[in-house]
Amino acid sequence: MRNVRVVGVRTSWRTVADGEFFCPDCGGDRNYLRRAGRRRLHVLGVPLLARGDARPVLECSACHGRFGLDALDHPTTVRLSAMLRDAVHTLTLALLAAGGTASRTVRETAVAAVRAAGSADCTEDELLTLLAALAADTGPMTGTYEAATGGHCGHQGLDPCGTALAIELHEALEPLAPHLAPAGRESLLLRAARIALADGPCTPAEREVLATAGAALTLDPDDVERVVAAAARGTRYRG
Ligand SMILES: [Zn+2]
Image (cartoon, rainbow, N blue to C red; front, side, top):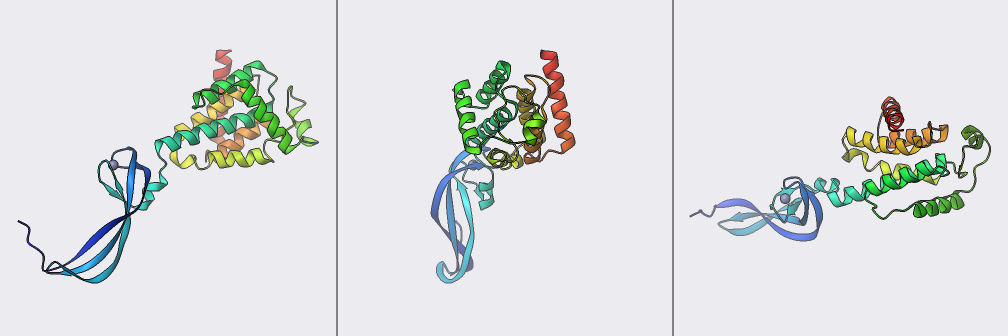
């Protein structure tokens, strides 16, 4: 038998919200209850003085572990997969915009990359339609950029790094970076570089997209160079 303590502080909890999170103890996506607590001084089991609010917690519905609200900073695996899928999709579009879509190998490599990242029903038509819509949004580029790309075949006339696409690239990649190990971030870049390299060496525009992506993924410029060089070697071996 437990004795009733003469004097003590007890916390009464109530549920204020629920949702899904990545439980640090179970290591998976679980439902949680967000619980707010109120502390009261008890004397002989009778609640007397309010002693303020307890720190709110998330309670896992599976293991009943309790965690601080910062547990929500970690995305669920479902959310993380969606972020990865979007990141690859955006990065692929940026590279196609930079390098053009005239090469069939490029188009096939791009579709394969997007499919492998989770958009299993992605088609060439879908990517080309999106690119056309982007070109209509951002308008044709003028001057230096055209010259810099040397009229690369199939070039869409987009400025991949000065426009909405560059912003989208940052928006898609930056939130992902803290949740991926360095190897995971490099592997994203490696797959992207293979698209750029599918029709020959990187153009300056493609290189710029890869550099922007690398920066958004918090990779050092040296590491970006190394990954792109590795992709180039791999592509040559494959060819
Ligand atoms: Zn749990």
